[in-house]
Length: 299
Image 1 (cartoon, rainbow, N blue to C red):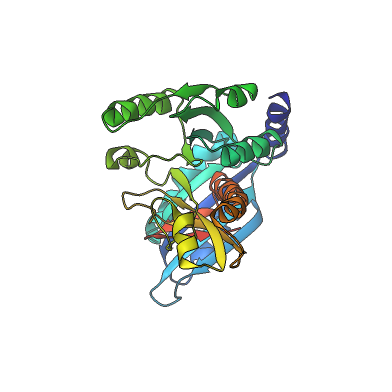
Image 2: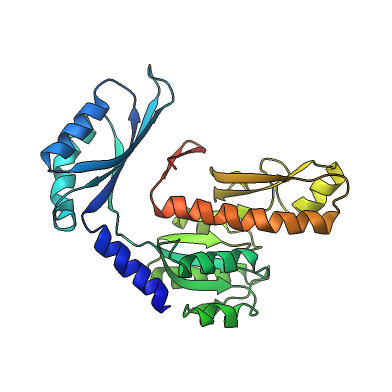
């Protein structure tokens, strides 16, 4: 825990003058010029800029900028008020955020530990700059592991009869800890539409399949019966449509006829944990913009 706290302190000290700006709007000439001129007028120095247009004529434009500006933490509200005029002129959806804002993360997990452990190890090593505030599980066996990292662990059992009551308890805990993002690290329960609606674009799932193939339960068994030559995993935002939310990251590994179901699962577990960590990292760094049911990811 000490090492993770030191990583955060060093990060905050190093980037105390840095902020991010994310923009999506109808594409037209002059957007980049207006934004960069505004930042220059605020004394900002742009250190990273990424942009994408679906179509320069009538499409959507997306922009992510990181910049350094003196005393940005004290000036954020002032800068946002000034920028609102430009945002209105270009019909922008936009967000300023401090580079040093450490998002609060809740992890949901069931019995399988590989994704949870990868998250905890990356967090401890300082590769995931986040505040892992709590872990919620419908099983008890991960408690000792999680608490050894100094993270509170809550056992909330779920059955068909108690699902509504269990979700009410989970929501209460998430509000208590003021959570910014929820990570489903192989949490083998379907969240209700009510739960999902309370955390739009703030729930990240890992599905042990290269979606849209083999959605739902037991995808490795489905893949084995189909005789796949590639096995994969998909991390996506959760929506009411099962396993059909905006995809953040995917990866695959080649397999062949010699691989049985357990082999596919073994290969898949490696892919799952790396894909989930990447997706969470990009979310934490405000590198993901959702457009319709797709994502623009500025890596």
